[in-house]
Image (cartoon, rainbow over all chains, first blue to last red; front, side, top):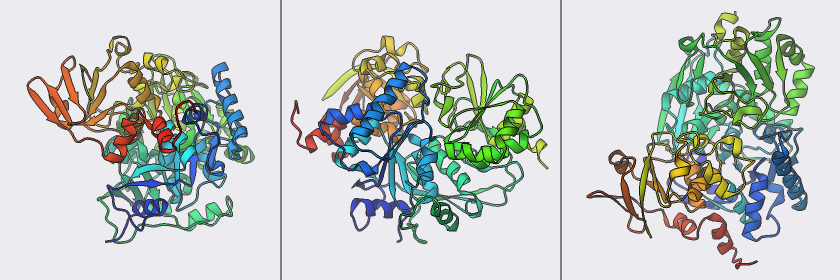
Length: 419
Length: 167
């Protein structure tokens, strides 16, 4: 019996010949991510009683969750982090002018196929889009890895999700992953590795694959994975000169389950309050008034997302009753959007262009909601209180759906705007 | 070790945003202050009324969402003696062990036990006492139990690195 990608990589990183699902292994990660939580982690690290981190080169620290600082407390938090990375000679530190961690780790060449990446952020699953094993962990665990270079992981069973068919007009990777989450549920693949495959994934851009893997955690997955192909290699060639080894599941690997999804008849999808698996077709909820629209975050803040939004908004004005916030996922995306004239279109339509970062996604700043307000966002979570107010509602959809809805001031089916 | 306490019961998919809101994640650093906001957006009465060793009982996928460790820390410092659920989100499960907050997978018990009931838990034997009934649960695997028994991952790491108190 062959092995899955996850079984193979966890064997490799734990120094074993092979592993089997269910086994607990001790691994050394290649990259360890922490962001604004690095200050709290450094406090835990100091409690351990070790003076210096074991491998500063493995540590990557982008500031993104509340940038620039929204208050004295956030500013002090950032200050502790800047001092800590200096003290520990951590070179891979990215200050507030860089972007969201899950965008800049790949951009800066820290994500390679066949590597093991752990991060103190649940959406660390994103890097599976490049054929890495990546999963979220807690703060104490990052502190402990800094000190020991080791952590235990249980080898998960793998579920293969085959996405097949021809994507209809108005449907994007976000709609596909929302549909899958709605179908399988918030705990549909709890503690499992997920391998996305099928012709739709093969034909999908790297950006779209990142959206799939980013949201794999919203159905409980430990990690998401897309088998690297020429597109992956091409994308990475301009980002890194490092060598890497592509690891793939064997053709006779032991998948726990294979689930097939056909997209031929898929309509634009939307996650309704207050859970990510409360998914409906946009057509079922169209007409609901929105106070705020948000395009961006680690799920959908890439250049192709902004491009789609600007194509929808070009030459039109957003509704007077809605405010539209745009958060490019990184400064690189920001610069490219400027060069391509995307920002001009967005600004003329009435959008506010924000700085790269997480924005109000986790309720910290830059556009949090008031009681009774409704936001339609391209982010990955809509839990109660998520955008700073427990009496507000958050819906999740694709950048195209969000853009069309901003125009009308209500949830709108994008297909009416496409030809 | 065993504990006895009153039950607070909740549903499926209790996420980390309602356990510990994101707006506090970088502004509250004190563990006792974290406890004051435990379950704030789910049950505003909880933090003020919870007693030491009270037990949370919930359905599937408890702790889904963010990786924020404060979701486990705030419950621990609020005095919660254990969380019993039909299943746990994996990062919350790890965070709980790393904070030495007992997490118990016991599908059967969840359907019987109601809010306000008294329960007793014997962690070593893997037994949960409720009214006349005894539910059994599987203790944690040895590698993971060590972390829990050492009082969480930070003290456990100190032990592994043979760092003595005061160093």
